[in-house]
Image 1 (cartoon, rainbow, N blue to C red):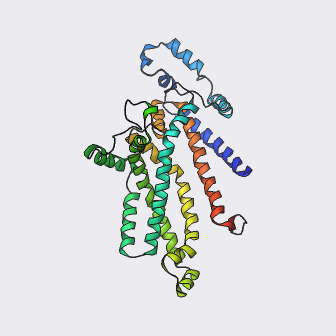
Image 2 (cartoon, rainbow, N blue to C red):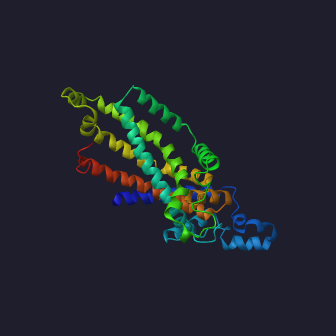
Image 3 (spheres, one colour):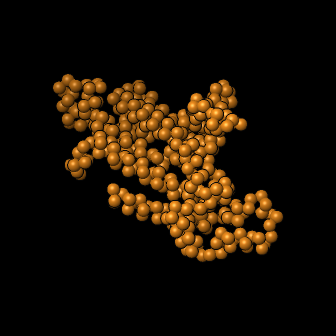
Length: 321
């Protein structure tokens, strides 16, 4: 655990340095971002005062040191767009995105795993070709395009689902029911679930085909084992570890897909906040989200390592080399 924390700290330091200097050397004007539409009304003296207040006259190294010192103390700064602490914005938006990401992540993993097993058990047959074709199409389909198609079909044409937002417009948050939230969540979650199926299904299929071609499986078949019994006794453990690894690695891809889905469906989550921070030049919020997403992806990989040991006890004992 100590080594994992050390790796996380080193990773965060590296990401912090890279993200800070990329944003610092971008064409974003932090004063323009802070003042907004009133930029034309302020004079040179006011502009200088704002720059002095935010420490913009200091060198890049000094600015990074002050920012990193504040981050270590738990202060991510103040959002220029929301005029509130960055930590509060991330917390509020992440809670809104968490349900979306969890539903999409679980559904894509389960469906992809089942599709991969069905295709692998029926290699070369019609159902295998159908699943492969379906996955290849999904793998080459942009998430934003799929989101727009689902929006046009199910929201605009059929009117079955709302066009966007996380709750009915104009309704108080305390008055929004669970089913209303689920109704607004369905299409964004469906988009991310469909897109995430392909990689898991194709990877699981290939690993299962490799396992079924091994000597111990051929021996089991010679003894009369077949179908689900053969899969359960000799296949599941060997294909579940790679599938879990791939599924947790997709944490980063899931976050990226969430940004697209939330933007298309106007869902007020962390993904939409990332877009707004980037377009609006909200540097403190953008840097805070970068650090948070790094921790998010790293935690996913650590959870994968822990699940390996639960599924295959040999890894706890160090028997696998």
